[in-house]
Structures are given as C-alpha cells and as structure tokens.
Length: 618
Ligand SMILES: [Zn+2]
Ligand SMILES: [Zn+2]
Image (cartoon, rainbow, N blue to C red):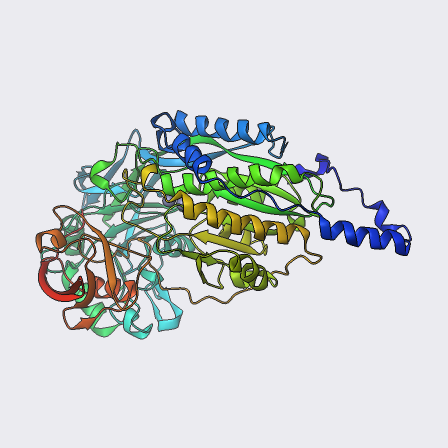
C-alpha cells in the first residue's frame, strides 16, 4: 500500500549531489563528515529503568491486546516521541492502528447429529464432540468416509485419500500419523502430517466438506479427552468445518461397517498401508459449527528522525504483552493476574525510547534517517511488524536494516545473544567494532529467523539484528517484574546498539541482504502433534550445553512429585542421553501417559536419579 507516497522527507532533496564539486568543496565535505556526527551521550540506567516501571505499572494491565492498558502504553510512547521532536511516522500521526484477533469462542448453535438406519443420535457439545477454534463456521450434512490418518505423504509413498471418493463428504480422521513416518523421516518425532491444520487442509484439498477427528489408540493410561477449545494454535479459519468426537462415538459408526476402530488402526500401523473406506450409505452426519472471533484494535507507534537522504535504519521493539495471561502464559494457574512483562518486552520498548532520546539531537545530521518503531500484536504472532511490512509507512526499499530488541533487561554474566549477524553484508565488522568498546560477551548467530518482530523484515529481505539477553524462569509469568531488571548492563548494551545504529546510518554503503540457510528444527509447535505426556518442567532455553536445565518446575506436576527442582540439569531420560531440548522433547513424545521413567539430573554438579510418573496433559 502506498501509504508513503504522500509522506514528504525532509532531506530527501539530493540535487546537490549532481552538481560538479570542486576539490575544495569535496575536502570540506570530507572534513565535515569526519567531525560529524557527534557521539551521542551514553544511556542512563536509571532513566531507562524508570520507563520500564512506567510500562509495567498496574494501569498498563500487562499491555494485553483488547485492554485499556495497552492504549495507555501507546499514549506514553507517542507523548515521548513527540516531546523529543521526532516526526510522526504512522498513518494517524504517530499511530498505525490495525485489528487483531484475540481469540475465539463458541457462539449460538453447535451441534452434531448422527443418523444410522433412520435413528438419530444428538451428541453433546463439550462431552461427546467439540469444534476446534480454527474450524469454519457452517452447516454440513453428508455421508461419511474413513480416511485413516488423513495423510498424503508422497515422500513416504503413502496416501490415505488414494482409492476413496471424499468429494462433498465428511471424513473421519485419526490423530497423529502412521507409525512408520517418524522413523523414515530420520527420527525427529512426528512429521508435519500429524498436525491438525495439515490434516484439515489436506481434507479440504480433496474436496471434503468437514473433518471429524478421533483420538484412536490411546497410550498407557491416557484418557480419551476432547482437546479444550482454543488450546491448539491455528489460523482464524482453516477453510473447512473441523470437530473432534470421542472414540466411543466413532466406534458405533465403525460397527455399522462391520469393523472395529482398534483393528483398523492396528492394520494401518502394521502394514503401513491405508485402510480407507466409505461407511454404509445409511450413516449420515449433520454438523453445525458456529464460532465467533474476538477482535481488538491496537496501534504500532512510529516516529522518524530525518537524515540527509531518504534511506533509514529501523530501531524497533514490541511493547505489547500477555495482559492477564492467555494460552501463552507459562503460569497457567495464575491466568487472570497481570503479566507485567518487564523483560518481555518493556525492556526493549524502554530501550527504543532511550535510543530515541540519545539520537534525537542528531536530527538532519546523519546520512540516513532512523525510524523508531514500537510494535503491537507481537505476542499474538508478530502481527504489528507483519502489518507494517505489508502496509509500510515509509518505502520498504529504503530500509537498510532493522534492529530488534526483545528481552534485553536480564543480562547475566555480561552475556548477550545477537541474532541475524549473517543477514547483512557489513554487520560482522560493525558489531566487532561496537563490541570492542564494551565488556559484554557477545554471542553471534547468523540466522535471522526467531520468534520476534525482526522475522517480518527478514521475509522482506531487509537485513536484521536481534538483541536478546536470554530466557529465564519468569518468562511469560506474572513474576516478570521490573525489580529483576539489570539496568546497568542494559545501558551498556544500549550504547552498543546506539553505536551500531550510527554506523549503519552513516556508512557509505548500506548492508546487502544475505540469505542465511538455516537448520530448521522439526515441528515443535502443538498443532495436535503434541509434546507427549505431561512432565512439568520449564526448560531454560538460554543454557543448553549437554543437557536441559530446568528454569522452573510446575507445582503439583509429575516432575515436582518426583522431587525435581529449578536449576537441575536433565542429562538422561531412561536409557537415552539428553543433550538438548530436542532430545528431551523427542524422548517425551515416545513415552506414554502413566509410564514411570527414570531420569538423571545434575544438581550442583552431583548426579541424582528420580522416578517420574508421566501424566496426561489437560
Ligand atoms: Zn517478546
Ligand atoms: Zn513474549
């Protein structure tokens, strides 16, 4: 969208560059370039911490989408940018409003009626059946076809849809995937075919009108539970009606075909061949799904420091957080309490404010401008930054780099993680120079994809740098409070970011975008693939050398009952050595509910073994 076509750039007048320069003028220019820009004053830890206090005050309500608090936070940011004399760079002065979906709820009539041989059975919502939050709304009445795991895996020469006609039919689909997929794909746990969204899209692509999911075979002491509404991530509307029913309900349907559900599933698993079939014509289902999305209006807050030319550097951070907790809260028992998000991400937001304060006096002096961007909707899926790159308020091709700060407030042992270093051709030397002036220990990684806003810019081929001080046990919990922030080291990091910003804003050449080929881990997110049984530890993503360190243990969980503690480092799970989080996730996925596993942890360096009885996730 050409939002920027009417935007006028002070300093974009470059006619002077086309005039023949005299040597004297040139010399003058060189001298001037060497003496300006001035070095900005250093970041002030106390001022920085005060901004974090403001952003985490109770009136900010955890800056959740849909709360009044996030609006108050936007006002604070706007007022600050204004007072610094920065130019508005939103669509409505400093603001760029957009709408986000904050959730979904069942509304009105949700029913499922099964008709067999003239007799009707009405299923009870929440007890016998339940739609998924990403289901389409609508009514479907149709004959029924069983399509196994609903997988079309060319790479495994396996297709549940071969030899059956599902056009305009309702398909019954098993959770998970044929047992052979994981082994054939190199043992990384479940493949994408196990994900509910993949199954839904595959059914839709084959012309089916609705999907009925069943759990099928249960592991160990697992109960046949319906997945709670709204707890599986997916799009707003996957484009087909999709519900789940209890095994017991589906078993009745299998009997009408003279089969049993366990036998059919066993047959697929042992032969690695599909067993799809159409149920007898006298079985029909009528499904009605009615889901309403809840929406909220939020704002990106954008301010511009004009340079001499029309190119610019973006310095950004998301300012939204989880409000009073949502699906992403890591303290589910405390949902309803304010999640203040001091580190995530008042720390980055206040960092942008501090940099704006330090750099504002350089207005018009730098070769390139600086866009200070405070994004909303990040916690709901990078929505603010995605919106901005889709409808940019400045020309995208003039953005030379995007620097993102997400969680920079808890620097420990001077360690700072910097991602995206490989995405810009000039980043390495710039960072090394900036880093040599501080005592921080910088850990570089080349790739630019991570779960924060800079990812939106990588996808537009804009070089990115991501500054991060690491995860901790207060992450996404009400205990992420301002008093745990380390403002002194954060200020040191801000001086480094300031120096990087200045180098990028003044260098003769802008960095060229470099595509970094990344080892992407297998499917980690839910989508019905699941993480296996419930263990109850919260891993510390920041420290994963030869083991998984627990940043916390959930009270009452299997891990807590076994006596495991925060700080323990998991090194063995039954007979499997655990080197990293993937090993742990994989081991867990291969275990069963009710199984007792023997784990070995290191506590203060001493090995301890414990027996953990795995439970079902609920
Ligand atoms: Zn964040
Ligand atoms: Zn977050």
